[in-house]
Length: 310
Image 1 (tube, helix red, strand yellow):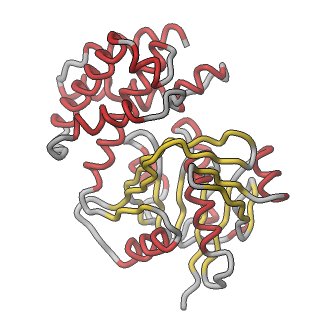
Image 2 (cartoon, helix red, strand yellow):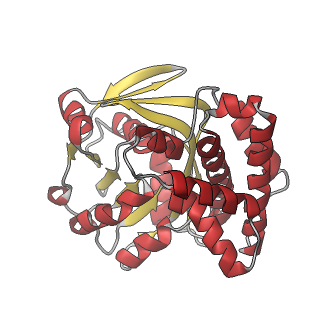
């Protein structure tokens, strides 16, 4: 059997959750190696104690084949799963050059809709998929990832294309107990996720409130639903059709999320560290709407307010 080398690039909530499941499932398999690219205190804890994944059904701790802040020594990878904030993507890609070969498959699990194209531009020789994760998960402290949602799914693929390399990593995901979907209609999933996270990020950040307070405030909920409607209009203008009932499911994601949960963009703003995904989650719809001659008045209002206050 050919050895498969998998690199998880970014060990925050999403990378930690899926990377932890892969590392645990294949820890004793000599033909599958799982590597972590991490940094700081999180890396220190992973190397000393391992990564701990906590869910409503229990928790486990596991270690990868190796973990480092510089992945060059890991060599060429068969699969690279990228899970970082949009503002961290350019420097991350520059650091992955020693890991990407002609047969490498790169799967981005990002919040926006521009990531795969950016990766393909940087690594035109690699096979770059689209991908997204539907999960509420946080790196709550170094070495500890906690999931707060009942939904924990991963979707990936290349529009209108299937192939053996994609099927192989899908099998590895399933073998690790990951709720994985490989689909040639991936743009529908990307936009479904984007509309939810974009509207939720805009609403939680604008009102400075977690999901529970948004649900309890009629004005905030109206804003969220207006944002969803506008994003759906943009999606249609892009030529992408979502399945019937998509709007109701997007709203249900907010209604069913933990009351104390919020979006990562809102968390970044609260942290005061000066970086957030506002441009990829809120600025992008505004700019793209301008190019497509679509009016998004609520997005424009919130983008203007947040830009002036953050």
